[in-house]
Length: 305
Image 1 (cartoon, rainbow, N blue to C red):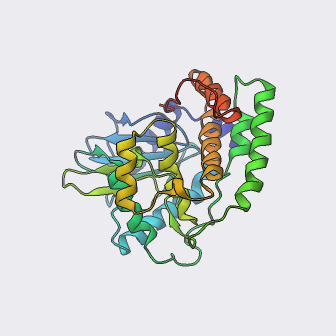
Image 2 (image 1 turned 60 degrees about the vertical axis):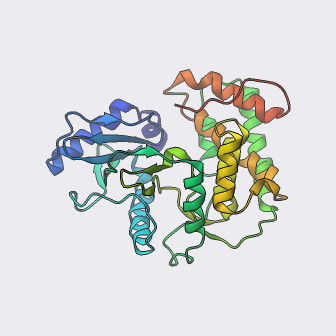
Image 3 (image 1 turned 60 degrees about the horizontal axis):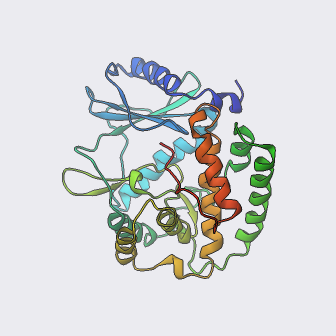
């Protein structure tokens, strides 16, 4: 199966099928596995009997990313930064089953969604870490797979698809000229409240490490700022984030351009899911309308859940 075929066929049922095969290999009980959230590039399952969490990546092209994620967890442990850890119950990870890539992780007891203030504090710690060893992390690419997401989208008028491709090229050029003010560091790449949980012990733990890279810290901060911009964080939550981190990126000269890059990424990522989730088409069209004219009145963005 081609990479595009693997991505298009990655549904909840396909993810569970691969999980079942992996659990058979490791003699794990997944009979009551529960899917945690929608399936995107990954399907994440809780295995109550085993008290672990399984993560099924969409296809074999994700293997290098998953292997890097496992190395990142080890490095973060060395730096004493709280992040999710692979399960010690399962050796020799990742597993390859049915064309998918499966990993098993420690379950965080009684998890609660992280708050923006928690995110600010943890990102400040992350961005203060020494530059990671050479070769551990790739150079950050904010446009990763956006072309393919646009090509894979269904339910779009061709003028909308053309607009997205043209906008992508415009922002590639604009990104190269951004006046970044901080040196490149290890960044999370996709920090939002679902990628941060507080355990029963009150400790805040970082999740979803697959987009870790060496890049501008401004990217991590713009993710949170854009969530405020589209109405997913209120003013109080964003103010708490800024206070805990110590810098408000909206005051930076490059904010508008970087926010546009982030909004395009959020739009194309959702568009790439429309083939298997047609219900997302109206939201994708709403986001495209926002990108065309940010000042025009329209309904707020809705998370792609």
